[in-house]
Image: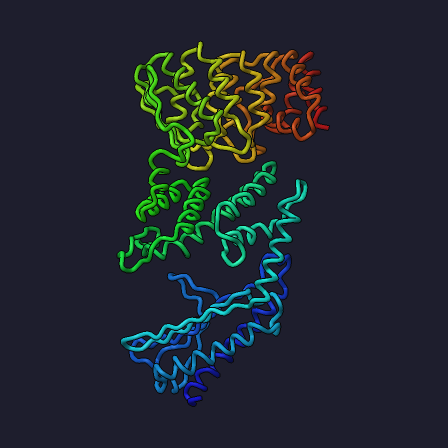
Length: 554
């Protein structure tokens, strides 16, 4: 080996050895490592970056993680005078093969521990000259490790995914499981293979919304990573300041689109769309550019499961289940038009249309419910308009019963503080305008996810404003208060100022758990101290009633 090449390799490998020794110790100390992770390290880049003035003033850069284009986390060391002696031929035919051999030997050993290296490893070498750059890379594969990973995945599926609850995977495993599902080395990239597994785990986590949201986030990220690192670069070039846009390559620069890959890309787009509808639309548009008629149909009319257009006597409607949108045009502003529209919505939902849809509305009426916290969306406007016709209340209740679903949200706003469960606008309006629908309000309040929805916190105030504070309303009022977030504010217009109200509240709280009593009394009185002060200041017989409430806290 040429002396300059040997000196360069010595300096590089000496630094890599030091870095890997420290990393090995760190990895050894990690706890809760997943069996679905064959190892951690899968990348090494060695690069010579030339100096600003001349080649020899540069530095050796070593990256042990694939770097982002906008960051520089390289380990840097100086090079010797040998840098100027190295030729392209020596670097290509002597240095890089020798570097790969050193890496491969270490990669196939357990010298740094069994969890140090992943089953695959990429070696990258770059050398900058004044007018050119050498760029080489080699992919290494550890077949026994891959086989072991495949066995671990199959065992995980059979022991953690297939069995019924309460058997669940560990939280640390869900991330790796999601990424293995889109890894062609261990799973066939097809909807038929992967969809049942995603659906099974999602169903098992239904009663645990926090973990289900984490799982959705993991597989959404995995699909997006596959789309943007594997599929799209074959046919497009990243554009825009942050690489979020894609420009089609010239036809001569891209090959034919593989049908199976395109089908998997469309499936990925639909999965991503559950939480990132804009990304779903972008991916479908890109697929349509590549000639996918299925993608074009998705964008235009949906999956085909539902008739995309409906023309009634007084309304014109359309829908797209893939984009999860419904369009309603009120041709004539009258009761029958809203009845037709409600029948259309109920029919769609009963046939399986996504309940978390977004509504586009054309209507000259612009009513809203008397709650400032609700989003001023077209969906809100539609139900507020329909609620101006009391004879439609039974139809609105029918819609609400059909639409309500725990841990689901309408798509009328960006996910956040104003997100609401399907059926919310109809239920809130019915509860404000008619006592006949108090049982529906109670069912809603028992179902709503108070950890991830906030707007019901403000419903108690609107309820009291609409109906006043009455003894016979206390059970439904308590259910409303209980549905609020644990950090819900005190309701300012509730004042327990009569023994009858105090007795009704005591009765409504008797069968509740202690934490529920605390929440309700906090939202009415503000704090235990303020309740104690109210007891002290009250006159009999109200004093005795408030004292009973105070006793419920002990």
